[in-house]
Length: 240
Image (cartoon, rainbow, N blue to C red; front, side, top):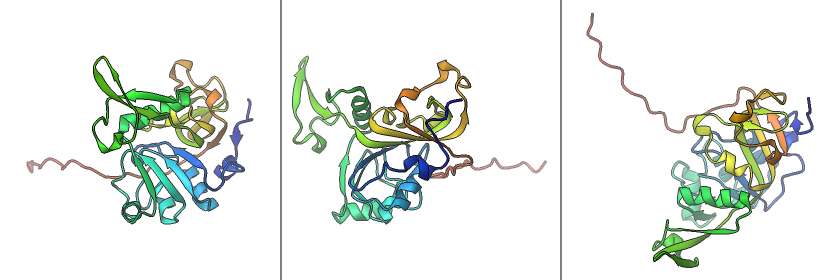
């Protein structure tokens, strides 16, 4: 069984890859499917001036939100930022740069970066402040705005299952921004809940081929925080 991509700890998996002023893509939607263990290593490393590309900045106590508490983030490229009070404070005070994107546009910018597409046109955001200063063009009589593809120095990915060659499977909602980010960075590091030798994953089930993955760390029992717990009231009993 090949183990050339396998590392014994999250710290070892990120060794030599972190530096100040780098750009990092981090998968996840809310707190679902975030590479929490790898984010904690970035936190502990103390690297600063980071450009973070992620759907959102986590919460005050989980995920990427920890990096805002320690002022390690210089710029955030995201689509949603509603659950992190410290981030909101820094944004309103002008202490962190923010580039907001419609969620589908952000996803496509990342996918385009991974596919080697430098730019594309979309109708989303035409006529809004997000489109200000961006080139536009007409196609079939309809105005579109140009968006640039996104790439990063490093992608941090959470997978449900991996083999030691880096083939990945995601579970349910955790299959969000992770697959496209895995293709769009100079280096891709994966934390996986389950790990096996090549051949243990049905080829038809593989979402991210191992060619995109550089390093893997097996994280058993990873914390899965719930961003907003919503429960349904129990039906009233009849007393019978």
